Image (tube, rainbow over all chains, first blue to last red; front, side, top):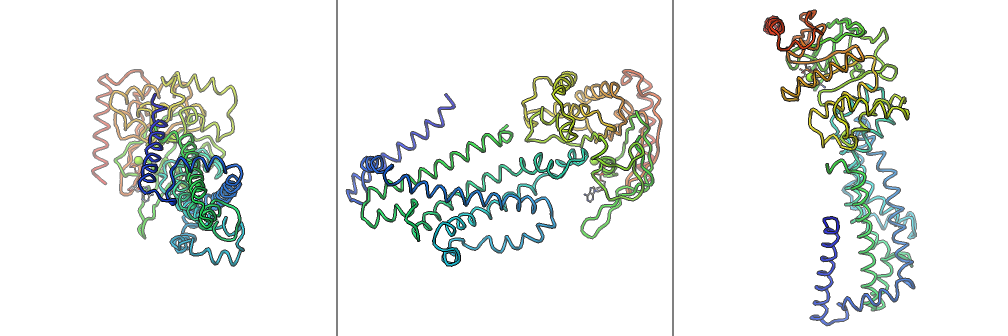
Length: 248
Length: 251
Ligand SMILES: Nc1ncnc2c1ncn2[C@@H]1O[C@H](COP(=O)(O)OP(=O)(O)O)[C@@H](O)[C@H]1O
Ligand SMILES: [Mg+2]
């Protein structure tokens, strides 16, 4: 019962949201606020034909940016957290560049890397990587030094210390950082996809808007939201599984 | 055999140098339990960390079985003050940690694991995480990890002090039974006179500022069965207490 309880509340929340939307559409009665029923009909009709390819492009850009950010950010965070000397050297660089609003760099990125895939993926990378570096570093810094003692006295190598302590200890903060960064990354992705591409949910939504096809526009928004929802759900499941010990 | 010769350890913190141990010389022969007793801050943990290969910066000579302390080569069983369990590993993984790092984990070890868990009265807890265990159970897991490794030396830092009085005596018995089976050279740090008397063949009295050895007492009561409620035990305890009081007041 308890297991289905959570899912049940989600369905309830979805129902409330759609009923509210439906009421507003009935009251306003404008094409810019269509009824959710019509939007669903449109979504079913055009998803395979025209939305699916755009959602795949968006997903691919998020995945590529995320993967690169993790591969760059995680090791840097570990080095900075575990070796104070690395931190002294790298922390100023990270702190000076972290507050720069990454989206403001988009024009420069587009000039340097073109308006194609590279600039979009780098944009997502930039947004996620700083959060990962800082979260992993802090996650490792707060490990009490006693935690390492049994490993030191067993003569463990750095690799063993990494897998026995650094990785599991920083995992919860690392996952939280990705969750936070992904929300920003999706908004920024939308923005970058309105430039220099014929593909992606951002393009699809803005294109539908220009064509004054509000039903398709809403379908696009629903799909983009759904992508976000799925990503969050996956992160939650990974966290529940990988960080079980935290909930005991 | 564990040996320290003129061991001096300094800590440097914010331009200030603190001498934690000064000219400590100590020999623990193979197969002996040596209890180290001293007031808090006198350098007991520091001494163990040097033996465990955690502190490398010291003056003097320290050796295990005639070799310099090298955790990668020797099998050092170290039980820190907070039991040293990894919170993200379950009981089974925590117990196997020593064997895993030493690359000696084999299929047959699972029987050894179950046997030692049974002996320590923690059967059935394999899948639990340390956060789901009582202090006494964590202590048992820590002992299981260490004894399963069959260490060359065993170092324990106030292993039973966080436990309530009843559990503490029970754990002392559990430990002693295990120790008799393995007879591993042991240094046991404590601040309880009774614990030192019950478990120490040799009792080392440390004093603070800077940490140094005041006296080394051979314990005639060691190993003579359940002595904790006998008059000799109380008498010896009183003597030891007086000795400790005198030396701690002097410094
Ligand atoms: N990492 C450290 N940096 C500076 N001083 C330390 C450090 N660790 C311990 N000390 C100091 O060294 C002394 C001995 O510490 P410790 O060995 O932990 O004592 P005990 O275990 O006997 O209580 C204490 O005065 C303590 O403040
Ligand atoms: Mg101590």
